[in-house]
Length: 102
Image (tube, rainbow, N blue to C red; front, side, top):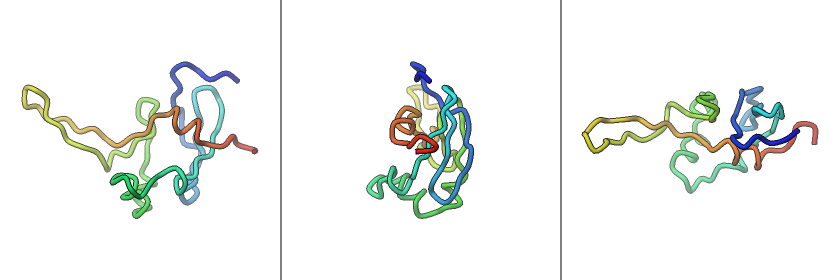
């Protein structure tokens, strides 16, 4: 199968510990071991590795794996606040993940 120009996460197939099976919009399933993918040097990644309940609260939002429990609040030039949830580029997940059945 080809890889679409704009690769998206289509769904979460399963979460087994910190290993997640993700389905992408090209029909492929990739297995991502977040114990290897995440770095304890990064604040949000460390928080997710230290709290499985938070980690497993992941959702697919607009084709991106997202944690609505973590993020940053930023004010724009007009003083309006917006919350931006922690998410990961789908292409990074796809490229890091192993093909199902390998």
